[in-house]
Length: 277
Image (cartoon, rainbow, N blue to C red; front, side, top):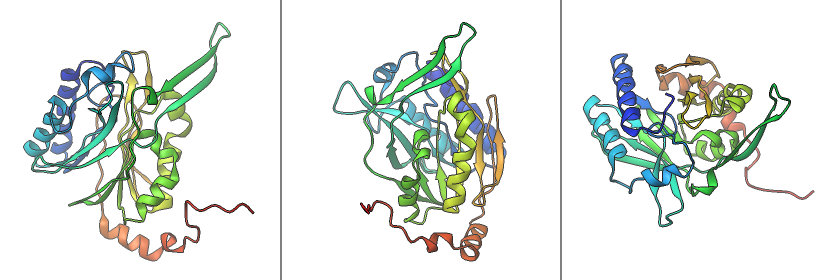
């Protein structure tokens, strides 16, 4: 998707793509980060944030899951907090009965400045992002059992922090769902590499829908949504344009691979410890 500021328009497009994916056999659907709204200003999300368990976007996700008899990982949506200046970037999971079964609040916030060379006038092209100005970081890792395997949740910038995935893999994750809105600059440099690395080092499937295109705020996102298998092979990808990718999750193959190539059992370093020597 290349979502804009019209929530109803974005939901209509998401619904169209969900229907297409279901028609192609999908029973688990993962939407990109900010699928329902990418406004002009970062503060726009404060005005459209929903209370937990109530709101047009959450109703849409529940209805789509129930209507199509599928599980949905609902990208991220802004959820109200006790502070009127900040929201949570919440990734909500709905089962095939339309019940919310998990919520993950984005852990790592994208506060960066990116220089991408110079333009034709010789001026530096610089992008600046400060998610922490309007988003409060989550503080808990989340996974959920599903008919397709145990799903670990992460969002966009999280993919740069392998220790997060190492903590999740301790809970026998089989699929990582990573809704994203990677910038065009960082996506071109790192997107595929990071996704394949997370799949390979954790011997897990990675499902990574990404915003891809130009948005009303002038931002360009990278696209290249993809599904990666536990050996790092890209099973399907959509480099540009609106659409979906699809692949089959084979847990028997995953189990056999982990049995024959038990690198997860060979770890000797306990992440989180330090040594001053």
